[in-house]
Image 1: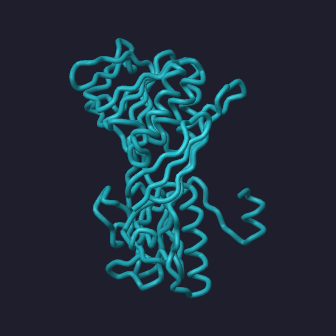
Image 2: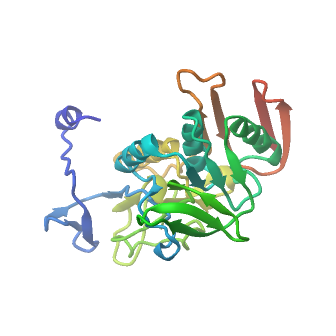
Length: 314
């Protein structure tokens, strides 16, 4: 929303401000500007962080990019204008979308992934093969079942190549790393959490209420990427969902539960989508939508020319 909307609806916005401390007993948060703000209900919507490769293997060299926020995306856009040898590390969401952007510009990107095929958490090998063929037809090269040993720098100190375990060296003047997200809970570490990556994040109930030592029940909520919630769709398994659809739906559900003092559990069907190769001169615009979970036997209908549907049946 814009500032006019916030003003009209009585929302006080503090931009460029970070919460650095939290006192659950006093029900206050403290900002990096030493401002203390009290609350009746606190909603934690801090999102996740992009996982980074260690500096010891070149993860912080000039020319290495991560995509977490708008500034990161703009920086990458500018870097792509002068790059000639992009390497994408990761074959998931970020990796495929960035690779498509590079391929659409005729940059012939290389994609390095640890998995045997792209989008391994969602797609079957058959579905992935169709997309890999499309990307390869546009100049993309895939390095599957591969691990990065080091990102090497050149004489100018910027990235020069990506070295894989096994000895393969890929020339690179631009590296984009998309290897997942981390759920950093600070400064709300006192809230009950789940083990990092399993699934990580702040553990909540079906109303997105969090709990922890010294926390008044139903006084603190966590929503969006940071929330580890019971997924009714899958027998209340505790999961995190890193997608805008869940971010919006969890915010709506938490607000409704708070305002109505409701215990209605969150009913959410996992949903993912992406669109690639949509530039003006594209001869093949591609979009995909995924509902549910990758569980059971997969039945595929169609040949991706131009459509394909798949059903997981258990």
